[in-house]
Each structure stands twice: as structure tokens, then as C-alpha cells.
Image (tube, rainbow, N blue to C red; front, side, top):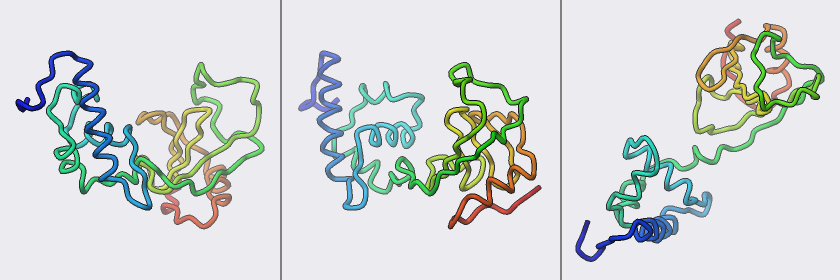
Length: 177
């Protein structure tokens, strides 16, 4: 660590990181996108190829270095633009897809699928549909259903076509089924 940044107590490391990241936020924010402290933290973890943000606290990262590391980083991926929300009267998720323990079972029929532009992760398709209550992501080209990156099943062709038909003014991936 540089002589002018000697830090002994762990809370000093944290306070210094906060101070430096706040300065970087001011420089990296634009008129069209306000960068947050979480954005800085996540971007640094990605750029420095760290396993977690904890390692940032013990690195020498003055504001100038943070700005240099992130000056060309695309922060817009952390702020996807909401495109549309589709509500279905009845579920199109196959019954053999495992239900999360956190899912409320009182919801018998309808589903809400959300589609974002510039999603941070274009997997499994760009765009794709999120069913947040069921923690599922649907590939809008072939209907495959994922939880994290594990494929759990597939929408029926008629259900995929129904879902796609309700999504307006969006370039969808090529229908593959």
C-alpha cells in the first residue's frame, strides 16, 4: 500500500474503499446512467476476475485506479431496460418442473413473465422471459426453461407461440420449434 494510504484497522480499509468508490461514482456516472456503489463493486469483481467483493477491501484501489479500470465498462448491463410484462390466465409451465419452496402455492393459474432489454446476462436467449415467482427463465426461441443455468424442461410449442404472441414491439429470437 502507498505510504500516504497506510491503513491498519480493517474499518479503515472499508472507509477508504467507500471514499474512493464514491469519487469514482461521480466520474463514471453520465447524464443517461447513474452508476451506484453496487455497480462499482460488481464491475470491479468482474474486471479483476475475483470470486467475491470481499477481496476489494484489501486491494489498493484509489479512486484514480477504479476510474481507470472501469472507464470503458458498460454499466448499462446492470440496469436493463424493462420492455414488457405478459400476464397469462393459466400457467404454461409444465407440471413436472420442480416448484421452489419459496413459491406460494395459493397462486393456482395466472403467471407473469417479464422481458428486459440489455439484460446483464443474455442467457439463454436475447431477449428472454423471466418468471420471478417460479425463479424460471424461458428461452424465447425454443421454449427451454432454466433455473440458474440448469435446464429443467421445455414449454409446449403452442404455449411458447402464445407467450411470444403477447410480446409486442420486440425483436424475438428465431422460433426453433
